[in-house]
Length: 187
Image (cartoon, rainbow, N blue to C red; front, side, top):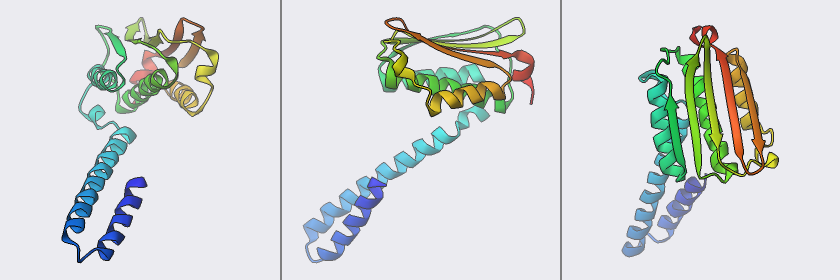
């Protein structure tokens, strides 16, 4: 919205300064910069709304990519442990798991004041398990039950699983998802 308002203001300015070539040139450069920023923001929003990579990658590869991007953007060390056997999952399941992890990492970045986070995805018996644990403040107030946590719980329910989130002051937060493998594999 800010970029569009800026573009509109600059377009109006161009009308007023049309006989001043240097001002027209600098205003045109600003217009171009705002358009580039608007395009970049739109691409990020589109990518965030639907992670296209899930159409082409298995969940472990998509999680590795997410982890690399998140760690680079946040400057928080991410330790990723993927089990040796993670089955090929239906797109719906991959999307729920990916989004749940993405929201967990967003909460770490926003609230935890952590220097590292550990992510573990594995299967044990007939269960698929996802664990996200950080070394942050662990304060109860840091993870109020807002939209993010509610959406994570809803995703867990949609997968037929359970989600727990707990924190301990000075020891960080733990988010744990446990899903029956039969439910995770259901189309």
